[in-house]
Image 1 (cartoon, each protein chain N blue to C red):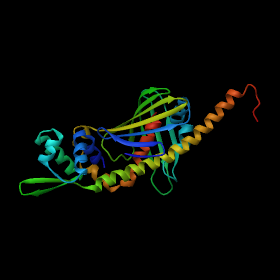
Image 2 (image 1 turned 90 degrees about the vertical axis):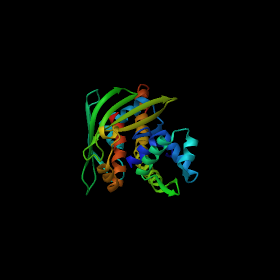
Image 3 (image 1 turned 90 degrees about the horizontal axis):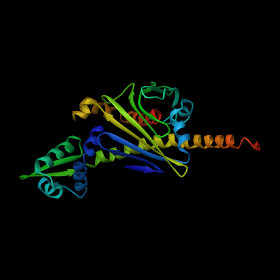
Image 4 (image 1 turned 180 degrees about the vertical axis):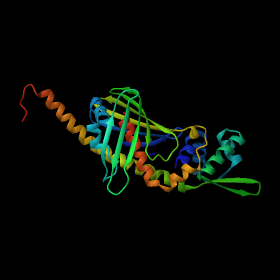
Length: 116
Length: 168
């Protein structure tokens, strides 16, 4: 999972993933779109490939890259689970803060002592 | 990347996870809830079935914190670290390390509280920094460990952020 984070953390690699969301592409095509040099693009693609995010297929002289959806879905599912654990923490915290606010109000209002 | 309610969880930069949530309370109270053990123990529990029998917080630069979570039938889960910055009631930075960390090196959590109109927005960031990672050689042992205990990772990480919270 951290490998996936790492692979996606680099802005150019994220841009490559976004390009590939539109369908498989060959390296030269991406070089043009990204405004990077071919060795850089190839290096990024290698990292993405190692993280399992893209597949490569050789067609004649061309290397064609395509996205593998599974890791992205995994990442999404993982973040969702993470979010759910935190949301339950924070719902408890909401309730606690309500209690704290009520107590503080009581405290401030103590002087008139009209509390029941 | 994922959001529901008003909780947002995203990734940013290199091995960084950022979580944002708004609370309907003044910053002072939210800060207390994140940094006073008797309050932290009431909400920082994670999935159902877990309790937090240990919550020690020495909230000062160089001070340490220690959390232990417990659930029947599984090993305790411990987390601790050292405070690097403490600016009440707005910012806390602390290192964090699980007893059974699955990643090399330490992580650093940052808690930032911003109050506006009586509401407080909390941003928790955890950066996983390890020499290996920094050098870009984050390697297989760890990845294998991650793959082998996916659920546990999510749980631990969730606790880690909470630590960020606690760290606060």
